[in-house]
Length: 242
Image 1 (cartoon, one colour):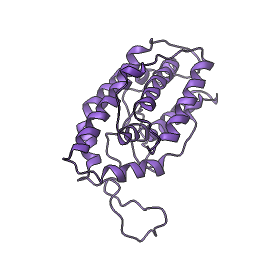
Image 2 (image 1 turned 45 degrees about the vertical axis):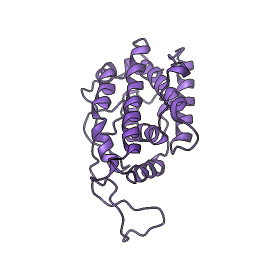
Image 3 (image 1 turned 135 degrees about the vertical axis):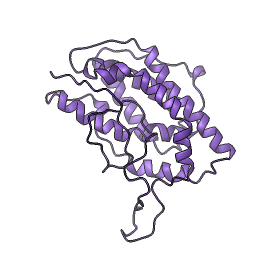
Image 4 (image 1 turned 120 degrees about the vertical axis):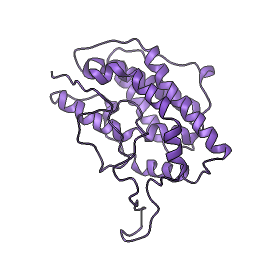
C-alpha cells in the first residue's frame, strides 16, 4: 500500500468549490486561512443569483477577528499532529483516537442542543467510536470535571470549520489506500448549510463586546483540547488501514 508523505497542512477553503490543488494536507481544524473566494457574495437559500448579498467572508466581521485571534492555538494544535502530517497512513489509527478524544470532549463541553453542529458532532463521534473499536483502540477520555464549558458558537466554529480540510484529507487517503474502504469518520457529510449559518451568527457579534471575548477564549480552549488529545493518546504506527 502506498504511503502518503506530505510536509505541510493545507489551508482550509470554506466553500465546497474551493478545494486546493496542491499536495498539502489539513488534519485538525484549519479554520484560520482565507478562502479563495474571500469577498465573493454568498447566495442565500431561496435567493436569486442576481440578488444582493453580504460577503461570505466580510473582512470587518467578528469571524475574521476570531480567526486571527486564535491562530497561535490553531497552529499549536496542528503541530501536535506532525507525525500524521509527515506520514498519514501509518499514524491513521492514532489520529482517529485523538479525534475521538477531542470531539467527544467538545461534545461534552458545549453541546446544549442549540449548536449548528450538534447532529454532525454526534455522527462524527459515533463514527470514530466505531472506527476505534474495530481497530482495537481505546481512545483516552477527559473527565467531565476537566472539560471547559464552551459557547456553542465556539464549538460550531471548531467542528464545522474543519470539514473542507477533512474532505480533502479523505480524498488523499482514499487515493493512497488503493481502493480499500476508509474508516467511517471519513464518510462525506453535508456541512455547508450549518457552516454558513455559523458564519452569519458570528458576524452578527460586535467584535469588541463581551460575547466576542468569550468566544475567542472558548475557541482557544477548544483548540487546546486537540493538543491535549495528541498527548494523551499513545503514538502508534500501523501498516494497514484501521
